[in-house]
Image 1 (cartoon, rainbow, N blue to C red):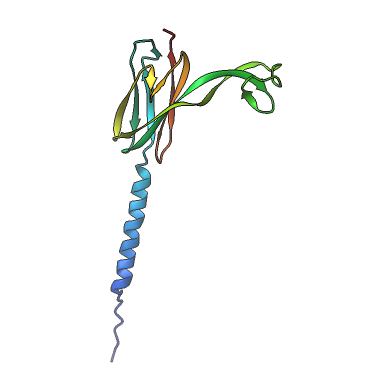
Image 2 (image 1 turned 180 degrees about the horizontal axis):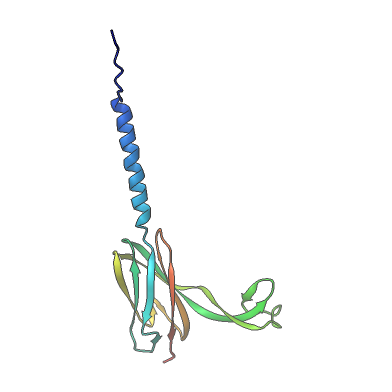
Length: 154
């Protein structure tokens, strides 16, 4: 009498294997579509007293986006801390420039692809004074991009 050995896989083991495979494929697809921002631009690059501009950016997946503005500041360079606000301690340092704290911030929903946001002398309830500004577009779970523009006195 010969005994045949038949390989059998339990239904539980098969279900676990299929579930694990679906989890692995879902996590790789999720990481491939992170809401990374690319191509941030401000047009026109100089805003006058009555000029309205537009912030344009591309995003890889739909996400909540934070757009923040920083104003250029002028300071003094020290070897210990780099460029900082002028003070009596660093008055002998060379002049330099840096972008200070966030002046204005606005949050919006962005769809996949190209998105635009209006830009005027008043942004997020704040009046922008003349000078150079840096706009930062950051999605909730992705990488940010930056662009610069000027506000002219008027």
